[in-house]
Image (cartoon, rainbow, N blue to C red; front, side, top):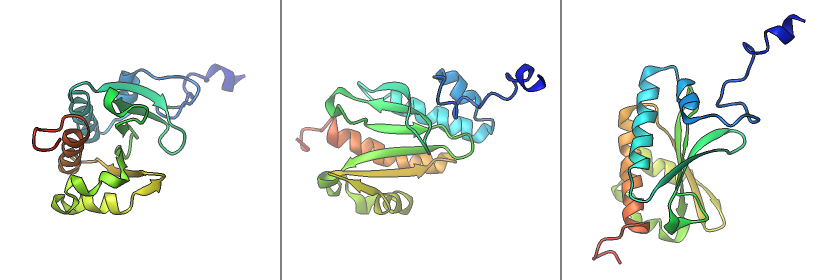
Length: 161
């Protein structure tokens, strides 16, 4: 009887509960470490701030669980990026079109990003890459990739078309 009455306190954290779609605020509330929460807020702002980008929350299965998914009409049906709000280890996952990876200028990225690309998993013509973003400096390094990918795939300049 006690277990029934304490059901509310034994509820899974929003990030893990597959059967209940959490609001964005609930996912953010699950990140109790102030530094990690600030990094995730900044990452969401960056990704949502890209022209035409739409943020949704969807269940992605294990190990990502509930994630913020960023889509752009120019890259449908594939999501442009994923932000995984793991309360202890937030991550950004970026699917890269394998044939166009070299045009990103991989050699100019910092080591952290280059290593993430090197350990990416190929599925068809998509290379699935991901990075932990547990500090502002890690986010800044991944941001460089995000900005280059955006310029290459969505908003090419006159000399890149």
